[in-house]
Structures are given as structure tokens and as C-alpha cells.
Figure 1 (cartoon, helix red, strand yellow):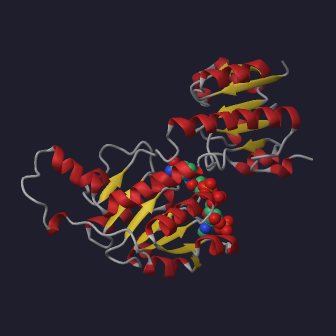
Figure 2 (cartoon, rainbow, N blue to C red):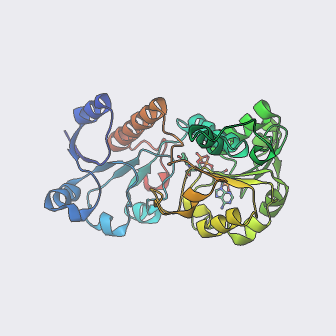
Figure 3 (cartoon, rainbow, N blue to C red):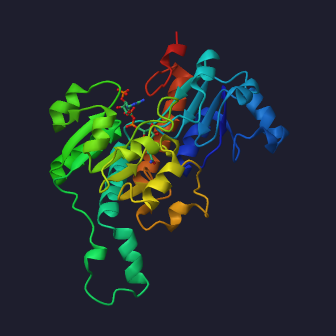
Length: 324
Ligand code: NAP
């Protein structure tokens, strides 16, 4: 067996066995060097890493001189310093496509749940407070026929837009750095500036990756440009939104509500004001969290790792320029 691999996330048993058939696998709970000498010495010999949700930067890479491939069980890779990996010739593999539809389902759940106040009213029923037919104070807002603005019309954004267009007869606006003529044709989406999207959308839906450009893309000023009856939905990454500014906007009625799957700090601290706000729906980062999709992601991450280690395959490689 020619490859040493550090596995830092649980894998389904059959996939773990497959990995072990091809590699010498050492299992750790994290990539924190403070966990001790056995980890540091395994890292020094490691050719591959497989796992998710751990920061990988220069400090860690200094301890991994033999590393050739890092395989993350996620499509997002903001927890990796890609420039550092590329500079050292380390391939970074991720899992696009297999989670697209599942994540779009969850984002649409947030749209419906937020507009129809489903979580809040479910809680009211459970607490025995449903004593008479609901009145205007419990009414939500329609979703069908409204304007859905997607910031980040990529794989997942397009799948959300398709649900909105075909299932709910919504008008679709989108904002990317580059126009997607294909998406415009397929789902009748209209390209516009971020300002225009914020001003005209009933649902502003964020599905951009986290980067230097998108960090705090939505802050106090941007929230102020939204309609007071509009909702902000974040299914991308928490730090894309200035969370304190969002809390204030929700408290002061600047916008009607927010549906969130991701946060600046995860898990969301139990004293977060978001948890007290009736107009915020807070899911625990479950975009891809179904049995089927989490298995498919793990399978693809194992495939990616083996193909990159064995054949330098660049399929699903974030930095293919390191090869050749
Ligand atoms: P994708 O296909 O790469 O789509 C990303 C889109 O964002 C592209 O259309 C891109 O278009 C746009 N974009 C990037 N930077 C931008 C900027 N500065 N301003 C405006 N638009 C920008 O990725 P995906 O597979 O749809 O995934 C998107 C993100 O969703 C992931 O990176 C991950 O962070 C998040 N995600 C979350 C969950 C969850 O559990 N909640 C699950 C899966 C993924 P341009 O390049 O033309 O700008």
C-alpha cells in the first residue's frame, strides 16, 4: 500500500473499507496538532487527507511535507487556504453536484417556512396556544407569484430558481459576477445589479461561496435597501451576512424575516438573539444533511481522493493547475 491517509471524519463502513483496501488509513477526530505526537507524526507521513470542517492553512501544511491531496466532504472549501495548497502542489478535491438538489430543497423549505411562519406557528400549537381560529396577527405572506432574487446563481442557486419558477410561478432575478446566458434561457432568470435585486425581491436568497469578496456582502446598508416586507434567506455561508446588522434589521422591522441555515459562528451560540426572534427561522446547517446525499458526498470524496492519489485525476479538483 503506497499511500498514507489521515481520515478526520466518520465514513460509512463500506467506504471506509474501500479506502483501507488502497491506503494505510489513520483515524483522528480533528486536524488539531495539539492532539499529540501520534497525529503530528502521521501528518508528517501523510499523502492524503479526507474529512470536513477543519481549517487547513500554512501552519498545518508545514507539518505535512508529503501531502499530495486533500479531499473535503463538501462543495464549499472556504476552510482551506487554497493559495497555500496550490503553492505546495497539493490538490484540493471537493464534492459538487451530488448535494445540489438536496440543498436546494432545504433552501426552499426556508423560503416557505419563513413566509408562512411555519416554525413559529407550529410552536404556538404545541404550547396549547391555538385557542381560536387564527387572525391577521398570525398571517404570513404568499410565496407563489412573488419575486425571488438569487445572489449566486450557480449549481444550487439555479436549482432553487427552477423550483421557484416552475413550482411557484415566481419571477427570478439573479446577481453573479458573470451573467449566465444558459440560466437566463432555461429558467427565464433576469440578471441585475445587487442593488436592484435587493430593492425588487420579495425573497433575497444567498447561495454564494464565502470568499474575501463575499464576506459581509450583506450588511446594514444592503439590508436597508430591501423592502420591509421582504425576507432574507441564507443557504450559503454565515459570514456572507453581517449577523449583528441582520439581528438589528429583524428587531426593527427593516425586513420581514430571515431563514437561516448558516451562521458566523457554528454551532450557533445558545445566547444568540436570533434564537429569540419570532421572525427568524434557524436551521442547524442541514443543507446537504439527508442519508442519501451524505452517503453520496462521502462516496465522491473517497473516489476523488483515490483518483487524485493514484492517477492525478483533476475531476472535482479546485486547483487543477497543480497538476502538470
Ligand atoms: P457554484 O456552482 O460555484 O455557485 C456559486 C455561484 O456564486 C456562482 O454562480 C458564482 O458566479 C457566484 N459568485 C461567486 N462569487 C460571487 C461574488 N463575489 N458576487 C456574486 N456572485 C458570486 O457553487 P454551488 O455548488 O452552487 O455552492 C454554492 C455555495 O453554497 C458553496 O460554496 C457553499 O458555501 C454553500 N453550500 C451550503 C450548504 C449548506 O449546507 N447550507 C450546502 C452546500 C453548499 P460568478 O463566479 O459568476 O460570480
